[in-house]
Length: 296
Image (cartoon, rainbow, N blue to C red; front, side, top):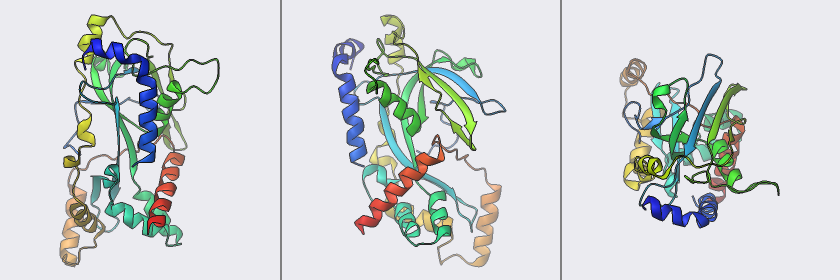
């Protein structure tokens, strides 16, 4: 979609996005090293952070300005190895970790429930953004990045499109002309990064049309995050899960010891919590496990 076509189609954008979000709720890559396309806010020693960004429209040829997926990231207690994989539940399919967690959750044992929580799926959204202010990393300002965020920020996007009070006008945060800058405000609360104070500024055009044309042309495709070809098969995930949990009977005790040493000495990817509070994860965990239990 060209910028001109995008400008003409704005009138129906909010309804389209709201309906798409509702549809996602009804239905159901790992890269080596940091992805240079990804931006994330920086915090200080007290874990406070501030930045101003602008959410951008759907890339040309794509329907939505965001994608949603789940993954798992946890360390095997017996092997010290990491399991970091996208969940097949993103595609509406059975996932071995989800099935295991469902059994643990319904075992009636508190320790099993805690293990299920430790292994639970994590919710991610990804959108294109334009960085307006990033005082900790000023070299990012004026550039387009991918931004991965959690449920709390997505809820703020939805709230902007569906305001609660009569004196508030709905805005499309992804609109280049009548959207709004998003002020990210981070503080540490109960051991988690909290984004509750983040807010939208007053609606305004991002720039003049010529500059917006340049910015929009830099948007990254979002399709790869939910492309089935980027997911491992159920059998591949099950094999990896068994290895990480130490359930593979073909390993001798010496091999298991070697695996543990290798896992401790090898460089590991940092697994950061993406949920804004523990309650988000607990709500998702409980509803998901209950759904699996009802399907059995």
